[in-house]
Image 1 (cartoon, rainbow, N blue to C red):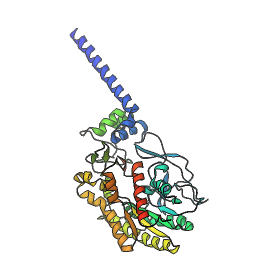
Image 2 (image 1 turned 60 degrees about the horizontal axis):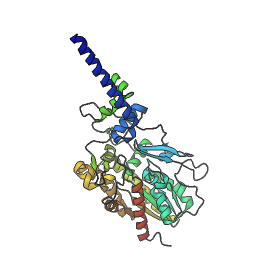
Image 3 (image 1 turned 90 degrees about the vertical axis):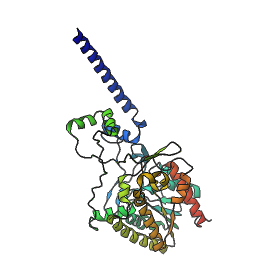
Length: 398
């Protein structure tokens, strides 16, 4: 009798535990979009096999001349910067057979300025929220945005030669971000023009991107609850999608607004550190690109200006420095190297760091919480700051 009663209670407990697990599984799947970024990523991998809430195709593809270029003819294509950063994208060719897509409107107007640059010129926002769109709207200038994600200075020179030169704009705005030197190295080493200089495999410390065992693979592919628990419980051996950008959990701060900023991704420390031979090699390639661009733009009587977009670690240095330590200097070294290049080549450059730091101290978050790019507010603020600088420099005088 006692044994039967114990068995009954045991079965009741098992049923209740199963019900609780099922309820938690359902809740995590239903409310996945409201989870913190790391938990979102884990849940989406379990639910969809990828760390994103919806299937999508990346809008840019490998190119031997540019590293990456945008596909042509895209119409409102869904894109993700992280599981929580989404935007839509349409592209056009500037002329038939151009072969590269651009996130700009058809050029049926007088072109006052063209923009070349990487993903910070292309913008990880809706096009209406991009700083290039704000700048065009606020100044009345006819602007063509030639930004291409995943590219460095050599690519920007080629884009300017092939697509900017025929337009002969009075003003060329060249957007720079600290990984441009690294992208130049990546392009030239991929093409065999530079010998590989680093044996670093690029994996983040502490990330387990190896093959999980069979039962863990089965659970990860079927249970959002298991995937989320594995991502947050320190004692568990964590698995992360090798294609997803990893964060070190030490690097997260909460702003006075209550927003959380995650930073210190291993990629940035690697790609922006000018003590690395690869980035120094890329620097020399970029130097040649800027030198040639200055002569090219001068030949048609235009003005080249370089605008430097700082990292979020630098803009929020008062919050990030305690966690990053010397890594903050490494992350900022590429921007400082570019400023030295500005002086050496007598380039007209605008470093937005101080102005963005001033705005950041009194506003909501200017960068995405879990992505290195400027968010819509940051794009709007950057456009305002650049417009003020261009006006003070005499480029907006009528």
